[in-house]
Image 1 (cartoon, rainbow, N blue to C red):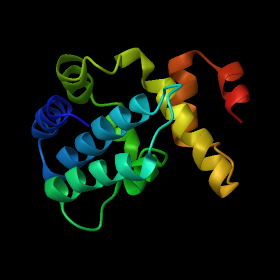
Image 2: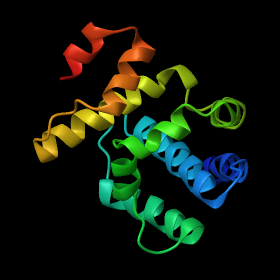
Image 3: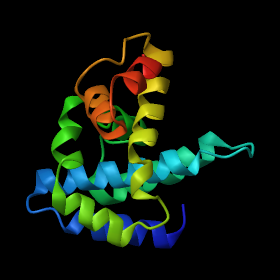
Image 4: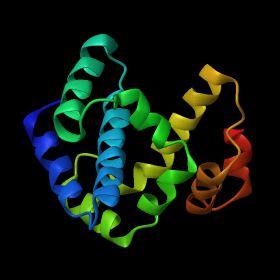
Length: 145
């Protein structure tokens, strides 16, 4: 993770109107960068990558948070206010050009798919429904399930 990504994520974070909203903006912006960054054919050292992200998370929002908890947040209902926030959408488009805004539904579906593979819990729920609405419907949701 380079310094420009950190700056961009922090800029998005600062546009939250409350601590709760700012932390939500931070989690989603950072999680989207993480997911976009691991979409590569290259062999990745996840321990090294996760360590960098975890250090940044600790320094930004404190102990008790990790890239794992960020990704878990992004697969649960609590992420919906961020995803549906016009301020987040505008801020992310303006300050995080390295992650195309249109890729958000794909990245979230990737995150849900990984969560399903790890936990065995079905991905049906509010986030899957949001993804389906963005992608235009039932076939996308059926493919995800």
